[in-house]
Length: 437
Image (cartoon, rainbow, N blue to C red; front, side, top):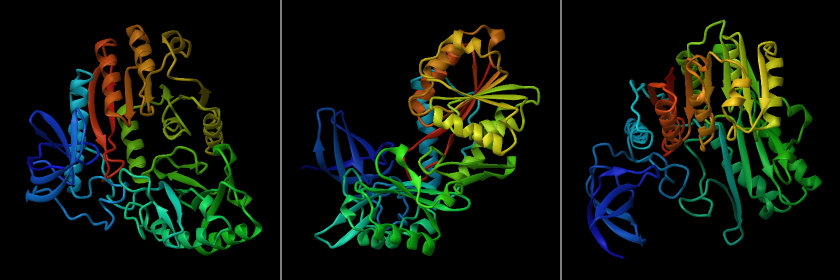
């Protein structure tokens, strides 16, 4: 493969430098914007090439030494070689470009980015497990970059220190089980009161296996959950651990219990900031009726219920809405909350009208966005529409698409938008936007 001197123009969301040669895009692993590098092409496609840095001829002023010894091998992080503030600036530019190019809209205000700790932030993780007979050991960690192998890692800086410290003991534990090669993964969920570990086992565990798990749990202060097949089979090893996993929202006096396989935000520090920011931007009044669409376990619904007259949470899963209602009961908010299960990707304006008028609306969809909801909102008469909408997004592209619908078809104004650095050192771009009628 060829060696070329390349000028790096920008950064993609996989942390690769972007350059051009003879009109063709080249993605360069290990390069940063503004750098001149000597790069070797490793793969050539009709529309682009991929390359890796052989030598940095002119380094970026924003280049830093990655603190993790596994960076570049492990696929968990993509940007540790870029100064953290510059990482956020890259994400902000991605958001603004998406709004302009896809939605043809521009925010009246760019909000300051929401930032938290750069390390130790990942309270949710799926750790891969592999028994390597040739090396006589078990690996527990994240998969290698663009590969299926498990990184041979002894620590992880983005995991909380108490979880990182479990990686080596978990290797020993899995290696001592009756069939370590039939353990493909361990999911981690860190709550305020316990660390829950979900052991995926492809074969039944023996009595000796259970004894080992119990001893590990007692010795390391973790709660074991077992998963024999699909998510519906997940259950706690000890019945007493069924309700221990929870996170708190001190600003609102709430305790949110959940199961380790439920969706919750990975970064609890940012989640608290995000809830506070979202409710502040909604400017909920005590007489307001508020909708929380894609409500999940009620992460926003319950805080909203502490401020509004009534909150209606809607989600596509019966299990999630049932647990959201239970959380409302546990927190004494069931009189102000109502939950419903519905596929929000197939709604229309009549469905929205049938729900009754909402003064405010919060939308927090998955990566596919909320196109059907945006079109339904845009089809309402001016007097029927929520006066303010806060949209929390994990995809700049679908946020931009839906923003274009709300602005150009619905007559809303994009008051402001900004990024949420939920996943430092990765290319994930989370964002928040506010629309006013």
